[in-house]
Image 1 (cartoon, rainbow, N blue to C red):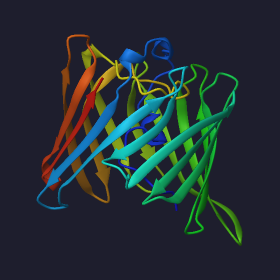
Image 2 (cartoon, helix red, strand yellow):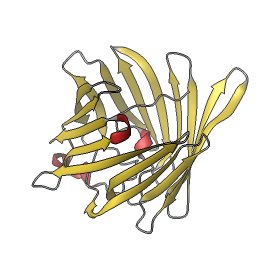
Image 3 (cartoon, rainbow, N blue to C red):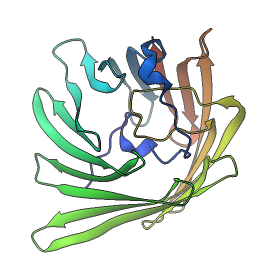
Length: 247
């Protein structure tokens, strides 16, 4: 089964996105966050607070995301061995837990991934694009001794600006999105192979198994129009999540 991370930098964010690409971060490291903090507060699921240091190479590509203080409990390490290949290793307590290889297509967008963990689980993902270079389908496959099987497929639709407005998967989970049309998306995280949204998300309404959760987003920016805080509130689980950045 695929491991899921809370962290927004993982591939799950890719498809709240459009075909618009901005590589300006590669030439201006001042627009790239130096730290990322995730503050979770809930009377139901508990509280957690983690801050990560972010590191980049000379081309402005993310190379490491390390929980602080040292020694880190969680450490993501990224390498770029070829123009069409990216790797990610996740260490937990100094032990390699997940290894992922990401292959890019001819447009330098994420195309296929292969992931395995130290529990022996192996998955692969395939992303299918339309003529506008927007991801319209994501397939996740599991491997076992009996062969390969489709674990889940998710389908995406877009508005006329290029933002994802809905997703629906084979396991009965659907999400609809609205956006702040006056807030162009400005967050850069040193991963140019991931498309970026046109606007910041305003609401997410998630439906699963007959239950609904509504997530409302609120944003704060600095004087250079850089995102410094993304706060969300989900009443159904009494959850406040605050993602903050320093530059």
